[in-house]
Amino acid sequence: MDLNELKEKCEQCRACPLWETRKNLVFGAGNQNADILFVGEAPGETEDETGVPFVGRAGKLFDKYLEAVGIKRDDVYIANMLKCRPPKNRDPQPSEQDACIGFLREQTRLISPKMIVCLGRISAMRIISPDFKITRDHGIFHERKGVILTAVYHPSLLLRDPRRKDEMLADMLKIKAKADELSGGGN
Ligand code: URA
Figure (cartoon, protein in one colour):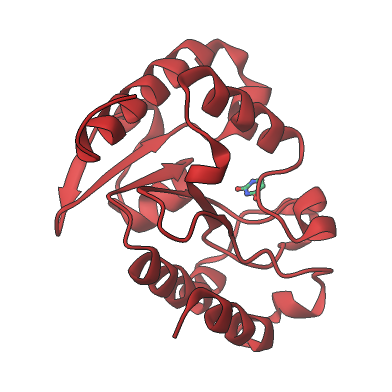
């Protein structure tokens, strides 16, 4: 199976009720051979309208960090834990996460990234550790089965709390340096 086939399967998914209220599936976007896979939480309104992850206000802020540290959006892959928008942007429920996580696992297997960067606590708690505390643990590198795992603040948190922006920049610079190291040199 390739990513396009997986996306078709995802379009048909009825494992939780969110397909009923979504406008578009937000499967993920980017380089299918990316070294870095960023994983957000769930699509928001603009993502639901467009079918593309991280294109609303939070996404635009995230783009600024990518640009500031010299990571091209076209070089990475961006996905969410949930592929359908939860109504009114509420937190994804555990049952919805359980229903959807298999798609992220399969995406990860197909892309085979060297590093997975969780955007925010929801994906970090699911992917890195259930007791992950974003204010305490952001920017720390873990390794699992040869893949580096880390998490940064969710960009929408930075919109609410701009005092965290310096820490975010520092984390993103570390991620860029680590990615260069993993790909065997910088540029
Ligand atoms: N927030 C997310 O977690 N994902 C998106 O795609 C947009 C906003």
